[in-house]
Image (cartoon, rainbow, N blue to C red; front, side, top):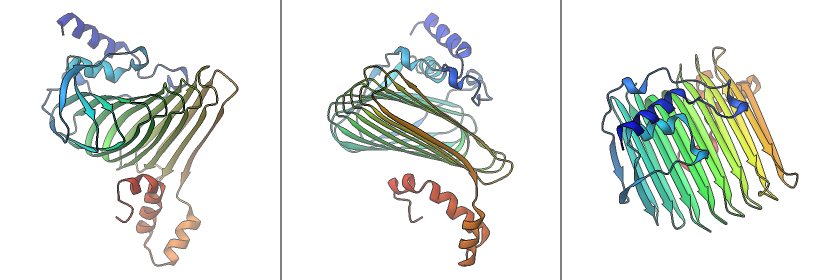
Length: 329
């Protein structure tokens, strides 16, 4: 990559807004560190599948602040995987800034177990593009743990009759900027995302899920759930774009935030842009404190207040935790 292109990418990152959609322009949590001031460090990576070197082809729908950042540091290089069976990816981000870019082709029905460990207060950043082939069912289990600043962009491109289930669980103490996009380009395609955050005190979550129905009878479900502790703040943003080609589409957005402290705050922003009438679309959003009636019931059975709070909080993410086998923890 030429120096001129790198300079243009850096300029694009610095000038590009955190949000490009009108609905979200005034609602975001910016990162408080300058990525270009950090020393880049090597990320410890382990993959159960082989990869080749490739380049990410930036499409207009992929223009995003974090993508420009990653293209700059990875010099547009990406690891390209072609997966035919269950796989496991592990990454450990330590000191300095860590940047990774990936392209993943899903050829057969499979599950990808995807784990991140952050052990630095600096920066972990990843951009990944998934291509799900015709008629393929894909399960993506993503788990993020640790301390630091975490930037993540995932793009899912679905062909005819493709099915994607995403279960994501983020825990620890961190700033999180997460962007999940699905492009249902194939008819009868299904995208189902369940994104959960269980972060410690003084954490920030800026989460966006954008789904685009671009073919007949495609379906998208988006769930964002957060447990919000003392001095923490969460923003959930969800958007369904049902194009004129998405006849007979079905979409649902659900956002939930559980406040465990008076010093915690949350904002839910669901949105829909519907170009046609022949669709089914709905959304729900809620921000709520611990239910004292439920607390009374649990404490009357012998649980302490702290244990009761912990049980109710974990119950909010029960379906996501079950996907990781954590329901009995």
